Length: 126
Image (cartoon, rainbow, N blue to C red):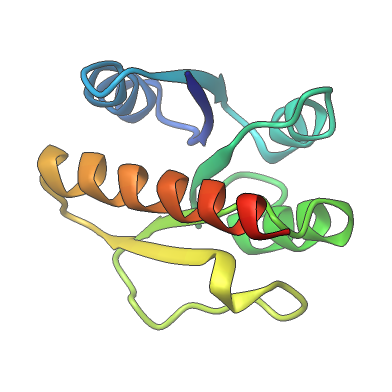
């Protein structure tokens, strides 16, 4: 079973994403802040993918991903944002997806399944 780290300062959003991903047999680990997310992302084993809001207190989602990709460049990232033209500097663009707000849960589920499948395929080729 795959594990996805969900980073959002709104507990309701994390809860909705957790329920949606549970329906497709994905385990969710939650973080309310970027600092919590870093601790989880650098744990062993790291998550299979990360879903993060862009707007987080103290450290935004872009900074979070830049820090994570310094050592874990293969972790796929899904940004949840109202803006579709986001690309952080210093990360692998092939590992970045954007889920525009507002989104349907089916779109979230489909995107997560695609990202996880692509990640497994790239690991198998390595």
